[in-house]
Length: 171
Image (cartoon, rainbow, N blue to C red; front, side, top):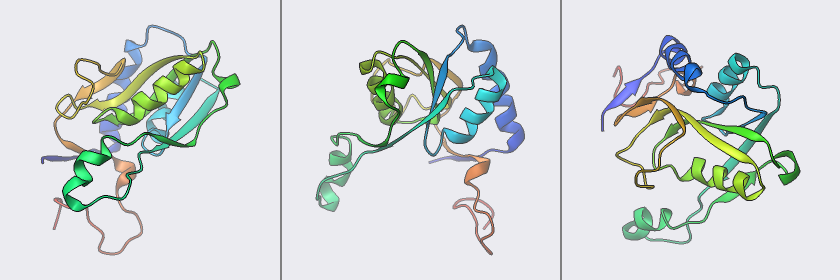
């Protein structure tokens, strides 16, 4: 798989590409941990969204063998490790932010849970990968770029680790 290492300047350009797309004012933002924290913070500042929440989701797999691991992980129900109270979501237009929409499972789980609490969720990512998307023609409401690459964001670069390198880069 092709890998793409982004710089902070690349992130600024992606955020600048997203901002004109927003056709609503959002009353709240839910940042999906961990990937949505940095882009969510940048967007919250740019859009002047002050009510910021986080959601943490895991897709645990039951006991499995190597031969069933790939298949069973797509059948797992989401486990919400952290999620806002329903009362903080009701009737609010909420921007749900993550870094990338690969399979789409995580951000879709968050969006559906917000909708079930009578919130009005809109999804936003920096990168959309239509080749990995599990939801047919369904895609993020807002995205800055389409890719088929494995994206490595600047905040994922290992810091303070002597000799650390990203696989496929440098060494």
